[in-house]
Amino acid sequence: QVQLVESGGGLVRAGGSLRLSCAASGSSFRIYTMGWYRQAPGKQRELVAHITSSGSTNYADSVKGRFSISRDNAKNTVYLQMNSLKPEDTAVYYCNRRRPVTGVPDASWGQGTQVTVSS
Image (cartoon, rainbow, N blue to C red):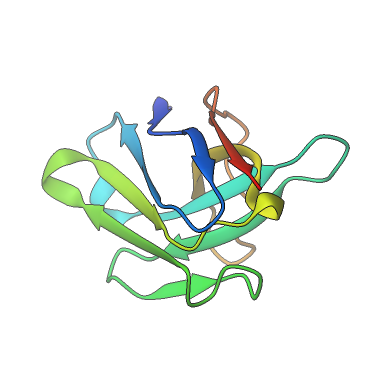
């Protein structure tokens, strides 16, 4: 089972930027599709972006053009660069592996990192 530790969140003003990091354990990090998810209070957790083992990326419409996902397989780390942040981006952000075919995340989650965007 992979262990995930998210970091890099904080309080930022609208229009600002943050870079989130996700450090993953395990010997097979390189082969997995990884995703960033977020959950705002009272709302469902949603997929923000994902990146495949080959480097292909996909983004939710709400963040496209503002966020960028990347990975460093040598460091077992996934990043989420967030620019032009909006108050509606406020949420707890999580990373996780995505299962083949379905894209469903693994059952085990880290504690996430809080992102708060003020007006």
